[in-house]
Image 1 (cartoon, rainbow, N blue to C red):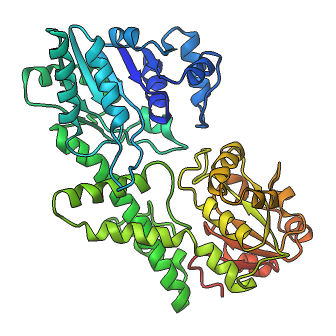
Image 2 (image 1 turned 45 degrees about the vertical axis):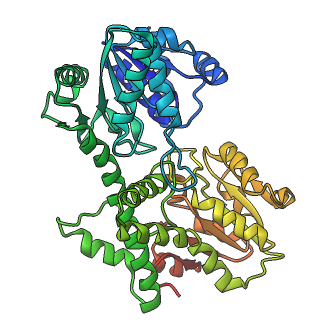
Length: 454
């Protein structure tokens, strides 16, 4: 099939590359001239394991191309994926300007019948807005072209996006109960047929329910994270070990183990803005999602949990203190710094007078840009932040090691070398990578999250 993907961000690139790898011919379009030039030169603007190679292979095979020409892109695909950004607006709602502009461009240049797919994460009712924009453009042009709007939300985990796309748990397709909607559903079933050979993964429903499903899924996962973080803080107070608690409750099949790890809070491009957007939708309909408002409040507070533990040990002034920091990205296997807990940790430590040597396998460049924004009011403070080429290099002369992101490279450190490099063997572990009893036996002062180590 011929497919157009509008937007070459995280979702657009993964969608385009994976669909091309299944044998489809895919044209990705973006207004960013520099980004498209880079992609055509073999440069991928984001880090996602396997994505660069997948893009290069399919470009070489002639199944994947990149352009800034929206006219030819709309003409090209029988299916038009809208995969542009929906950032949070100032009131917490999803900013739909890019989505509606993409829809307007499809309406301006389309002919015949088009399946217009909302792949971006959008609030309930966006399908109606996209359809209205398309009709407006077709009426203005006096065109007899037709369309159907489909909601096909993505469920991609950063760091495992290709595997998630190629081996999906479910494929949600929201369509209208009209002749055009039935035609669109048939086209989408054909596109996703390779994923359904073992068993049916498609979940067909109406458009609004499909839109709601995406937000509900992320809200549930965010809730589990905040729930465990709140329990971890209580475990610290009462002297329990949250890791043993996790194993105890996770063994119940009604609960399961996933997303029950205590830490420094969730970040990234999805959970924060999707929780806010769903809460905003509720308020717009005269309702309050009290659980979700608590989830967000707990997460905001949890991002400072490591800083509170550092202050508890060293005091509010950290002048003269030097810290090693492992992990900048909001999660491993990505360079995404959006809502990353490391930003709050670095900000608090530098403003308290400390110096930092940080390491991350892939996110340093993105971290530098993000922190320049964070310290726009005090750029001189960033002179006290350095970046190490290797994890062990960051430890030299450190008063303590702070772990923010659970990269595999941090899971089995040489504790003898760690102790030799540091001023004092102290670890503040924001991801509970290590066992307190092992650290104690090695002579390391270890502070986890809810690990009964105080």
